Length: 301
Image (cartoon, rainbow, N blue to C red):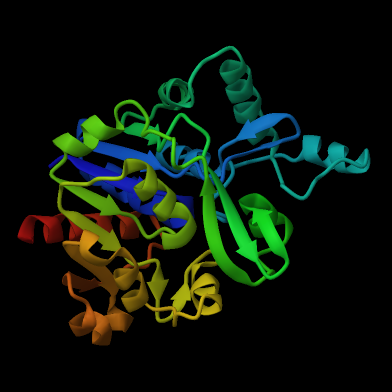
């Protein structure tokens, strides 16, 4: 079964890894949000793309879900000592990724090609694609004005109250080479348990059209997110955070929706067909179990 997974952040990376444990490498393509990419300290940084790649490669920090395992922090510590911006915590191994990506892209290599080369170096056999090779930048409209996503998310710790979102460049951005072909040849599209507003919406806006069955996994369990600000965003936008709210966000795009056991009472209110299961992914076996549940659900649709 050929699957295209749409992913961003730690939750998306975990389910992508679960799918990678189950599916043959040639049957899985992961399209990753790049709306939160930005330039910092002269480097081109792709937080979601790197989180997905590090996770698939077995290099991710198991405690945080982002960054590298066995990381050291000498560079950022010295930048901070010298008075430089240290609010975006970059480990030494991670900095090597950003430096080499920046070098290649300044020489004219696309983000897609750079990602492909990095995946080869890290032993990732699945296809990982940025959503676009063109820049798309997520802007968060807050009660303190518009903020670039990383300024809101990392520097300001998601404290400003959210009023809406804008994706600069999305109108002219085209999906990365290979993304359209992967979608057209897939049996189904899986929307991973990523933030619907700032991780998945940018991908959907770039892809524009999906003519295959779509199954989404809720990132909200019992009204809360396991990680990240999605529930806070829903509340500040005047929407009660819930698995139901996520399903309604995606609307008629969905053929199926996966929600956690604690939210089973919401199942009858969701228009798409539903699967109620344990969606928490605390370890590798949890990821594989949820991926298996999702794939079996797709087969039943």
